[in-house]
Image (cartoon, rainbow over all chains, first blue to last red; front, side, top):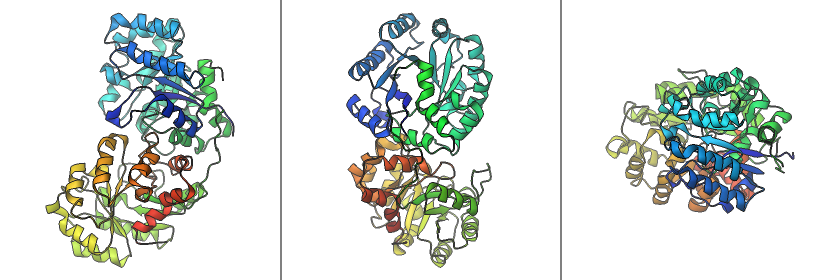
Length: 255
Length: 252
C-alpha cells in the first residue's frame, strides 16, 4: 500500500544515557527503512531552548523534504519563553510545540505554563505534551491525560496531542476519556510498552480521525512503530489516517 | 511516499521465545487459554511458542508448572518452559519433573521469588542445569546486571537467555554480552532504533532470539521490524526459529 507516513514524534539531539547518539544522515536511513516520509522532529534535551531549536532547524534545513520542525520552550526561563516562541513560529517555521513537563518538574496544568498556552491559543497552535497515567508514578502527577480535559476548556483553540496516549494501559483509558471531552484532543501512539490491543482500543474509543502515528525515534525503532499500526486489527482506511493523513490535515502539511 | 505492507504476515518459520500461558491473579489477560493462544498464533503466523506459566512466577513454581503441562496437553505447537524457585523448591524434584516432561529450558525469577541471584544461593542449581544441558531464561526485570555477571561467568557452558531487555538497559547491555558469550538476548522489548541490526553486528546473529512477550504485547510488530531490518533470509530465520531450537537442544 502506498500512503504518506508522517511520524509525529521524533527527537533530535543525543541521548547516550538511553543508548543513542546518531546523526541526521543515519536518522534518514532509519526513516527510509521504516517507510517514513516525514518526521516531526523536536529537541527537548537542552535547558537552553534556543540551542535545542537551532539544532532542529539545522536538521530541517539539511533535509527540508523529510523533516518538519517542532518547537520547544522551557518555563524555567520565563523571560525567554515568548521571544523564543516568536522565533520558532515566525522565523524557523516550526509546525507545532512540544512540551515535556517531566523534565520541567511542573505539572502540565501549572500556571507557569499559562503564558505559553495563551500565546499558542491566540495562534491556534498544536501542542504535543508527554503524557502518563494510571501507573502511580511521579510522571502521572505531572502529565496525567485527565489534566487535558480542563486545559482544553481553558485554551480551546489549542489542538492538544497527548504523546504516548497515556503510555500504559491505565493511562490509555485516561487518554481516551480526555479525547471524548474535546474534539481538540488527539492521541499519539508511540510507547515502549506496546501492550496488546492498544491501537485497536484507541481507534475504537477515540475514533480513527484522532489517532496519530509516532515512533519516538531514535529512542525506539520506526519499523516497530509502523508495525504496530500496520498489524493492528483496524481498517485499511484507519491505518492510512493514523500513519499520515491525520497529521497532514492537522498540521496543514504539503506532501 | 511510504511503501508499507498492510497485510503483513511472516513468510518465515517463527518460534516465539517468550510467551506466558494462563490466567493471572491481578488482571484478566487478553489471552489466557490454549485455544485462544493457538488461534492468535495462527493468525499472526507463529508456528510454535515457548510457554511458561505466569502463576509459576507470581505464586508457586510447582503448581504453575503442573498447570502448564495440563493446559498444553502435549500440543506440539506449545513447548513448555518450567520455572524453578531455588529458595524453596526441592532441587532433585525439580530436576526429575523437568526431565520427566522433557522440558529443555527453565526460567528463574529471583525478584518475584524473593531470593538473591548470588552464587552461594544458586550454584547447586546451576550445576544441575549445566549437567542436564538445560537452557536458563531470566527476565532482566528480575535481576541486577552485576549479579548476572558474577554468577554466570563461572558457568560458561550454560546457555542463558535474558528477556525483556529495554532501552534503559542498553548502556550496560553490550558490555555484558561481550563479556559473557554464553548469554543470548530475547528482543520483545528491545525496540531501540536499529536495535536488531546493532545486536547482530556486535554480538552475532546466533545470539539473538525473537520473542513477543505475548499476551502482554502482540506477536507482530517486532516481526514486522525484523522483516524490514535488511537482514538476509538465513539470519532472519535464525532469529525467529533456529537459534531457539538450538538452545533447546535441537528441538524441531
